[in-house]
Amino acid sequence: MTRPHVFAGSPLDRLDYRRRDAEWIAERLADPATRYLPVSKLAPAVQRADGPTLAWCRSHALELAADGSDPIFLGARGDEILFALDVTGLENPSERLGLRNAEFPDLRAIASRLSVEDASIAAQARHLVDWHSRHRFCPGCGQPTHTKDGGWSRLCRACSTEHFPRTDPVAIMLVTSGERCLLGRQPSWPRPFFSALAGFVEPGESLEETVRREVKEEAGIDVGAVRYHSSQPWPFPASLMIGCMAEATSEEIRVDESELEEAQWFTRDDVGRSLRRPSDVLAVPPRMAIAHALLRVWVGE
Image 1 (cartoon, rainbow, N blue to C red):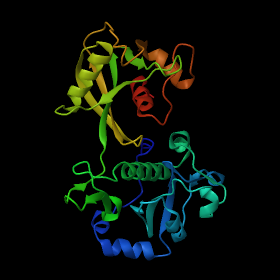
Image 2 (cartoon, rainbow, N blue to C red):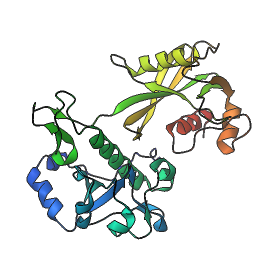
Image 3 (cartoon, helix red, strand yellow):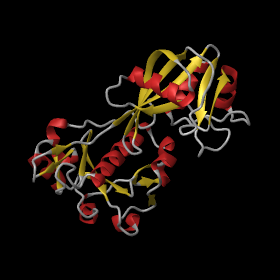
């Protein structure tokens, strides 16, 4: 089986029917065997000594959660019941939680070194903790919202509106023309780093329409056929990267400088060499990024 993209491949049974059962959730929270993944400033706890691996706590962590934060039910892994817990603001969280040698590194920096399973769980936890921190008040009436269904929704008791975690779809596309592919670079990226073009799906658009619009807007290139390849959860903060292969029907590049600093056509040989070793001509995204996978597929690796 092909290894899934980083942040995909979750081992958890999310037990949708259980998380809606308030009594069952309360029983799990009272169970000393339940495990909690602490998240501080959106960084899940990681035990570097063993791999690295995610660092889990028992029920004593509940007393140290961030103000206004409730445990978020992640799911079950075999007989283990797992929750995420926001401990942002806790001084010396590793010490306070009794997690020897644990740290809270930026997830992007550590993700490719975690196992498939741990990276996926960490992404789920980060996404949900971030969503809860941003939705403490109802966008409809401005009143406080409250955790519901084990953390998978928030309820405004003032206007009875229920709010759910959102995921924003993003099209990321490798545009090709024969033996060349189109890559772009943003002003903040170091030279000679280039990547596939990408953009959010807008209201009233299909995925194919997004691909064609974004490529035309950013690089002035017309696109014909669009083919879906694969997708990747991207919890920074809440996106789903939808990878596509797209065929160009024009060649002249006209860069929108408000979007990109530069866009270029690169040959299959250029990309193949860069995948093996970055050069002065081209550096491509790391393995954890779906853009890297699209490039590998195109060069036949």
